[in-house]
Amino acid sequence: MSQKDKKKLLKESIQIELVNPRTTKYRRDKQVEGNFATICPVSMMELALICLEGDEKYGYFNWINVEDMTKFKYDTINHIMKHLELYRSGDRSEKHLAKVMWGCMAIIHHDKKCGHQGGFIK
Image 1: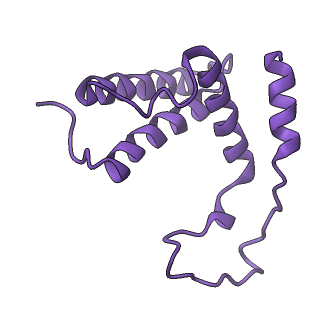
Image 2: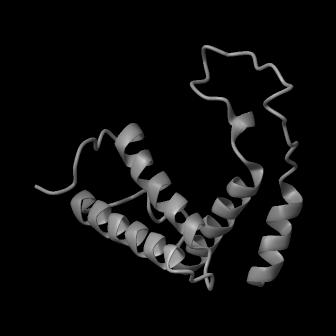
Image 3: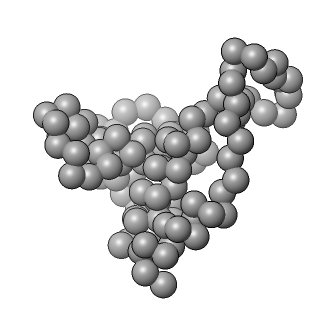
């Protein structure tokens, strides 16, 4: 299946209802720490497409099993800074901000779910 076909399938498989937070009251569930309805669906789609791109290039969920956490965080922070600078300078050849979101997602995952909190320089 080509990259284009996978992107099309992903877009078709995700049904997102846009929510107007000014007119909708949300029920705060004690089981959920956040309100997913307030996350921009366009941003979520962009992040999902970057994840798909990474899965094809590096393997499915390759960023979960990290052997050297210090190196992973260092490389990911550099990756984030590179894409922020490219976006800031006007480069629109890649989805720079979605790649920044991916980097933040990966670091948050390891900090919150795997207990690797704090800095990354020993």
